[in-house]
Amino acid sequence: MPYRRKFLTRAGYTTLSALLTMGFLQKDKQKQNENTDSIAATYPNINTPLRQIAAAKRKRYGAAVDGEFLFKEKDYADLIARECSIVTPNGELKWNATEPQPGKFTFESADAIANFCQENNLELHGHTLFWHMGKPDWLPYPPTLEMIERHVTGVMGHYRNSPVLKSWDIANEIIADSENDTDNPTYGLRRGVKPELIRDLFQIAADVDNTKKFYLNDYGIEGATWKSSRFLKMIEYLKNSGVKIDGAGIQAHLWFSTAYGFDATGFSSVLKRLNDMGVKPVITELDIIIDSPVPDTIPKLDQMVADGYKRFLDICFAAKVDTVTTWGITDRHTWIRHPDWMPKKTYGDNPNLWKFLRPLPFDENLKPKLARNAIAQAFRQAT
Ligand code: G3I
Image (cartoon, rainbow, N blue to C red; front, side):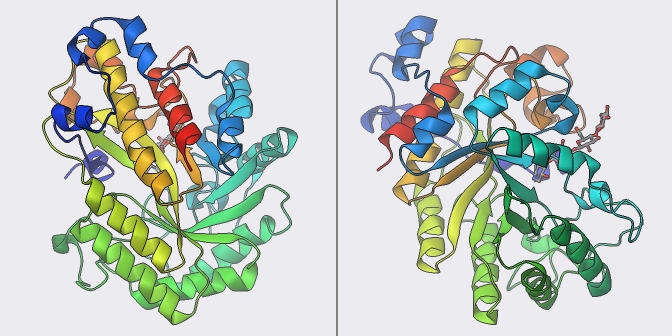
């Protein structure tokens, strides 16, 4: 399976009538879709920054930021500073960026983002210490315990006294996509990864700096799936092993479609189980693709994306989720539009269809979309 597909979670809508029943949409859907103004009425524009709307509910809104653009595009940097309470570096804290050669650490690009955070009163989320991608060529997967110890000591040690970095994805995407991709049916770990190695990784991290929040972060867990049940078992294993684990990162790279349903019940049960275990669910990489049949106009597409955000976040907030990070903030800079990650199944190779990839709350010109207003509305309605 091409890598780009493996990242993405198939989620979707229940039927339109079910949504109408639940009061998510206005009554005359057809008429509404033909008129941008009436679409906008679904989620009234709330100009207050998302960080402020979230803070009113003791919650946080964040976005992944790309340093390459942050220091070149003032409008983009201003938008991040205005809307966000927390940011995640897109790649600057990954192993390939921080330890490109064995034992040789570089923090220039990550420190630049940390400084930006400090100047703008933002928190920084550390992503990530352990991943099968975003790694230098010399590094095996999984790395040896010695390599892990050197890396975690070097990177976490550098940020031990950081005034902005308060949390780490200690491990990222360790659960396989299906039982065919694992030699460990209980925990479903990627081939070669042993539960004891992950336990030791968390222990090493705590030995270096136990003042930060520690997350296990993954995708494909937004429902009752083979993968989410393994993810929960792995969290339980870490808890039972006595290592520090504070949060479960739910990436939420979501696909919505009129062609299949979103497992709201299953997702709620995942959130409940995490809360019951005392491990806080955190939304770490949210974005939304609309799967085929693709709507025929941009306003219709934007409405579906917005409805997806609202529906998903309502479930999150009902389970007391307090931090929501989108993977980017503007459709100008989204991994979804990068040719390497293009979701070909839906959009094919046709660049004319790329304009339908509008997964984030602000458009290419940094204008707020319905998705942004839907996120604001969800925060406002959170109890
Ligand atoms: O920095 C170079 C740039 O100079 C060059 O012009 C460009 C040419 O394509 O490449 C740039 O590097 C790219 C980098 O992203 C920055 O945009 C790499 O090729 C590309 O492989 C890298 O991809 C990132 C990927 O993680 C691997 O690190 C994506 O942007 C990033 O969105 C993605 O993020 C992951 C999360 O970490 C984990 N969960 C899934 C999520 C989405 O794929």
